[in-house]
Amino acid sequence: MRHSIITVTAFNEHPSIEAFKIAVEEMRLIYKASQLCSSGIINSEELLNAIERAMKVCILGGLSVHNHFRAFYIADENRHEMQKDWRLSKLAYALLILNSDVENPIVGKLQIELLRKYNCQ
Image (cartoon, rainbow, N blue to C red; front, side, top):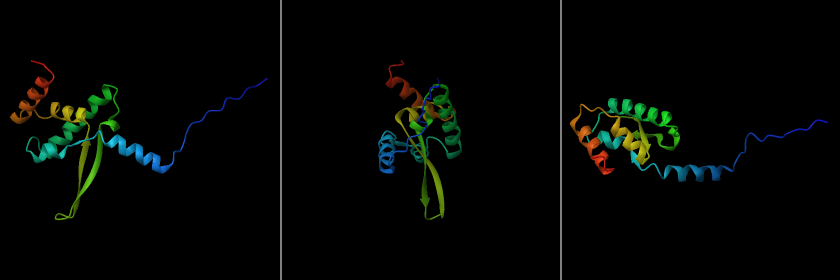
């Protein structure tokens, strides 16, 4: 006698439910990577390197990059181009600071401030 096992591999939710889930997930992404650039903490080239390193830390730590980093684009009408930015969770923002260029004195101060906040005296 043979028995069949039915496996459900995909379930398509209603598009509005999926959109709602995405909106709820993005509520945790309250920081923008460009904030670090606009405040002069890091330049745009170093930002990309720091984002890559911070994402690698998430992957090696078993965390979902998608839950902490989301790329989005901003239209610059003056220069007629699109600029990429990143929405970040609090964890991703901290990892970005910790993985920025330590040759920059502002970055060093932020790293110390971040660690002191968690009583790493």
